[in-house]
Image 1 (cartoon, rainbow, N blue to C red):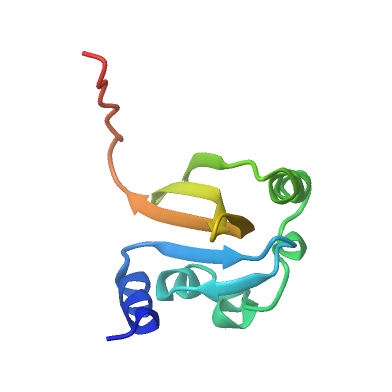
Image 2 (image 1 turned 180 degrees about the vertical axis):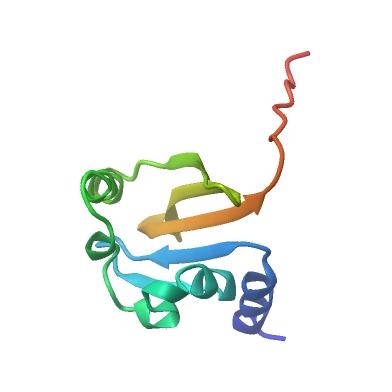
Length: 118
């Protein structure tokens, strides 16, 4: 089994959305969860488009700052029907900044905080 088939297997079976973009914000990869999550916006057709074009202000400016300054962003979204933990973090390949990865994972209930200082 080569590395690319291993990567395809784990990302497509990951129980959430994974989206990857380059340093300019161009979407380069989406797993099946991301294609499904963003289906109404084009799903797989979003690959090759720019994330900045997909976000209104003030999210666009925040995203631009994150891309330029390699700043991570972690938050929880909540609608009437679901909650999602979203992690947006710089991606490095061979020690060089190559873009961003966004992980989005649905959950229910509260997320416990485990204090490891005790």
